[in-house]
Length: 94
Image: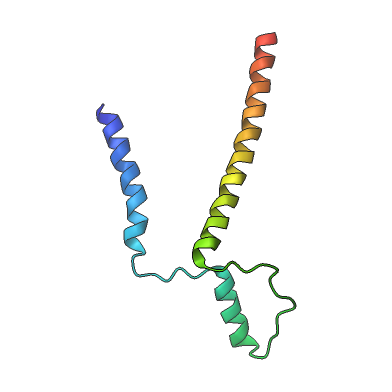
């Protein structure tokens, strides 16, 4: 019981500490940083192409990113399950 409580406290600290450390940070993406760097190096740079789809708001962008992450996790979980099932059936057959 003492070990489980210690693990729960450790997990809580690991989850909360990053939130406290970056409290006043600007969460700009690497795309924004790259664009700013290019504009300082070559001020008259013109992009080669424009985006195909631009989400109407930050919430929609977050939703699409979350759906992409969930779909990827589902595919990886399915593949792991298939291989685990094959290994289990192979072990039963032997």
